[in-house]
Image 1 (tube, helix red, strand yellow):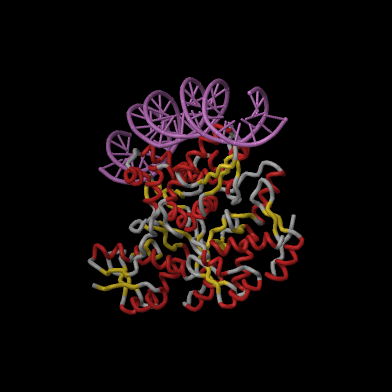
Image 2: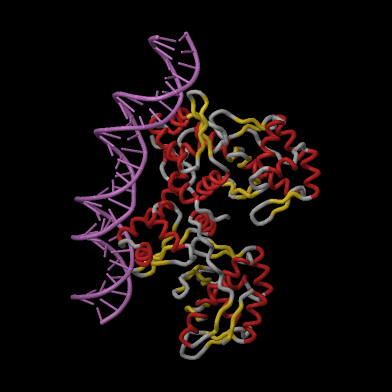
Length: 231
Length: 231
DNA sequence: TAAACACTTCGATTATTATCGAAATATGAA
DNA sequence: TTCATATTTCGATAATAATCGAAGTGTTTA
């Protein structure tokens, strides 16, 4: 009686109203905790948990555990693209310019996370490297493409040296303010160091926020197509 | 990818396994009598009738009465397109038998996607036309170059006639097995028809896989530089 | 004209599944 | 340690919908 049709599996997931609501929320490209998704879909946490488990096991949605939260996201760009069309959603607008605003907002704009860049700048840099084909996205890490090897050499980051470091070469790190991944690991650290060396960014005393210099504005725009407005 | 409101309706109907099986069977682009669809989906005729009525009233399937038979078919390319989208992110089929394995292989090699070619052959043909400078790739469609006009005339496809058709002249369709785009729309259909006319490919009973003939192997190699292993 | 056939409609039954309360687990904060 | 929070698991319920036997409507064939 059961026909082996896989189209049905995906269709079931997107056609149920609560799940459609969850997927719609997730299509903003960020990671969301389960409770937030439950609230957005107008269902109790248990029910959301039930739906999320289904979508994870069908490889439509991913989970990551951070403390007592679980952050859910769309599996990958390909899936996101198709879901957008199935759910009739316009893709999220890209933020093209960053506003350098007050001090409390500064930490959201750009900050260090241990030894690498985070905040809007960190996420945008990661995005930009991805779009440029310099890095590629894997499950828990980023990989450097052939084109990337060239790029980093030109950008005067010695990949050979970075690869020799004991710790993981390149990994994903969840950005709490952006709810998306940014580049971490030895490569993330090397990038931060290089930007400091170029004086594109400067560390600030008593805060993890970093300042983007005038040189930085220029350089980030030219090299990574990232625009930053100073207010 | 185009956003459309029909996607939700299609997804809801596809989510039921029996209906998914029926629709998948209809993806060969041919018309099938109700009893055959019932058999293919592994359900009784009454049940199939129930599902078919639903799909007809939702305008995703068509019926034609010929004597005591009723022939069902996919409403239009849009429906086929949505179905293929669902398939492209669905988990791969579990192969349970040798027969099923060879069937799966055949479908991935060359098949019809409603009214045009898909599978490895479909993608290779599209690639080849592109490389030959016959067609050019745009965002959501392919365009025919000047050189292309000549080519299709020589290949005995009447572009004037194809352009007059109501539906879109040439568009991209996502190939679920190759995960790339192939040529669809009126031009895609004309190409399929011409290859059938030339007897380079043949439709097979009870499957949307198509057979590549000996003539086809020769012709595809000479005209499109496509080498294909036949099973 | 009767019988076979293709298909549909009707009604009863069964299967599926979304939902949520209650309870369990695991982490973080005080 | 204790309490709060985030999330999941379990179990029961209720709504929905797929299924099929029986019967009905046309259509073809003998």
